[in-house]
Image (cartoon, rainbow over all chains, first blue to last red; front, side, top):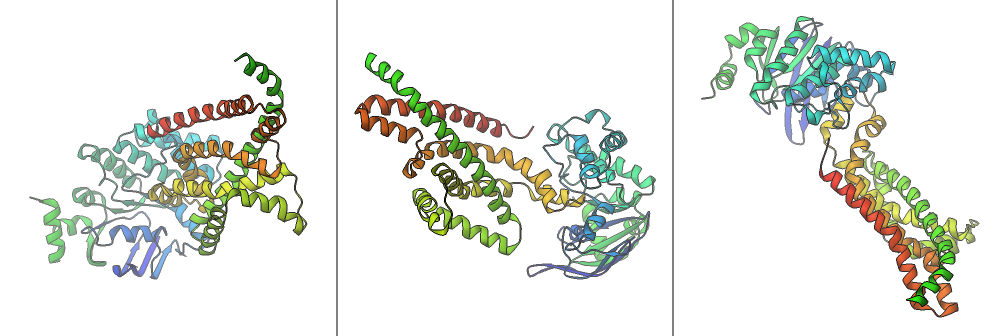
Length: 243
Length: 219
């Protein structure tokens, strides 16, 4: 469903991604972990063309990602994204945030979109927050609205860019809970996260990247419990036991 | 005082004719400067080099020439190129173009104040450049831009008196005409000043309310 072949990306003289290749199949849940600045988020942002990769090929359902082409709109409606800082539209209510894409990008019928939007808010546990503005919601609630907004596009896959990193610790659980239920329904997900326990439980496959290359990859459960590479071991030790 | 009231009763109807033109020039040039300013601002943030540079050149060109010279140029020089405008048309177009430069800078600042994450979120649900502007950036920029926009409105109201230099008989020119034919300078110009205040003070009140609302931040 998503294929990356030998991706390179630099910001100025900073070579962030140095030959990244991966294949993500339909229904697969892949987690990308690694130290900050290792290029995890950049990989994710290249997949839906928010960032332009310098070389290599990215295919989404066989279509090359090229942000200068009209096909990018199609790719972005197929691959939704959930951001670290939620990025809800502050001038629109929770429901309006969710139905913005269906109505204005996919030109769906307004009443049908509203109904589906309400269902999606209920699915993330926010049926009573339909008319609330993002500023009136907690971080966890905002992120759940953002997940509903991503789902509203009826995507084939969702990219999660550190979805719980900006949350107060007590609000992390409610967002992970929603993600877990999505995983249970067979949604294809690519998750950049520091929540190792969550990744181990939910993901099928884990990629550890450092300095722009994949250092180790394997089944999430085993790799995150018993990493083979020294760098992976070192990283996991520091994340799991910061003291 | 009795004399002033008698003068007021005598001159007000003529001065109100001038007020009518002042309002017309102000609103006309406000609308034009807003539309043009928006065009320059969108060109500046389009990310397309040629549009950005041409908008920059146009804005600096406009800013570098005094309004009065721009008015003279449109009213007295354009006829040589076969474009003849009435004084009223020329004043609206002249002031509209002159002020579009200031509007553009204001609008651009408002647009650039929007978080990049907002634009990315909009793109990530498949919005193109124009829809991102229309649905996400501009509605949020309005809140930021409104207070300075109100100030520009007040400045334009007062600067509409420059239309008098190309024979538009707006409030200032009407006053000058009455004063020079009756020699009642004190009464006439006091009335003119009061009439300007009657228009600008409510606008200032509106601006301060907008500023307070903007300071309260997002809902």
